[in-house]
Figure 1 (tube, rainbow, N blue to C red):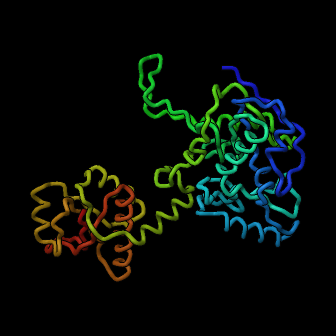
Figure 2 (figure 1 turned 135 degrees about the vertical axis):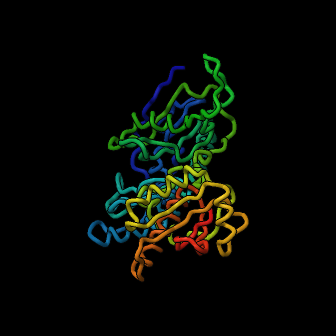
Figure 3 (figure 1 turned 90 degrees about the vertical axis):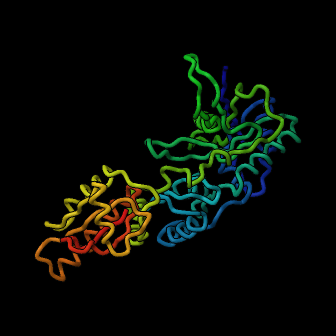
Length: 362
């Protein structure tokens, strides 16, 4: 495969209501079937009127920007100082919801296109109707990456090609079947187009030639297939936000045992993890001997029939009111440590005739 990346100069300043198909087609009469146009989302937003008026500077400008950001945000993923990483209503996870103040008058902010896939389809249809060319459109914007420094362009909207090339089921030269490999080819092409477009060169469109042979007749599913559902995202929160969510969850732990028997080694690890945080003399003992556990559970008031493991919780001696309060805190520390490794626990009274002050049923 041989690829060419071609600039499209001469598009000029884009304003609300401009026909991008005419602007691009006039600037690139050399377009041919199968070309992939990488179009900066900003000129689409400008043509579609996705701009907001704000003060040119000062605290009022920041306050206005904050209001716009809140309106464009579906949920906050992470924040550090003035930086906000959010999920937009499209599903994209981006800094500041993709709101941009570059290459626009200082009294305006540019928002992302409302529906980048629809914008790509409309531009593709316009070029086909006016100039008779069957091209693919990638609406691109710049994003950061969670594991690497630096930015790159990615696809927000797509029409005329598949967003993902699925290699699953293929066999590599060594005879290994590929089971996970799905390449986001439109992101790769968006990044390639950015090499030509740049950020300060007023070159909002690049053409990639040689990738599509032949071009698709249909628009395809668009870039929405690239958006990972938050429930499947292993990094759906920032570190501080995940910690805060965990601490909030620790305050509302369900008081019940788990549905399956916990691994004794995992329970011991949870006990060890709080050893340096609990009061001296507080002892947590996991009872692993089957006969001893059966004898103790028989005399624990309210022992749940579905519980399969037991931890005895003993406070330091002598124990007074202050020490008992601290002991309760330490028991909650252990319940939180157990919950962190998916071991729910129910707090119960101690077995009669023991030195324990509480029991955890697991």
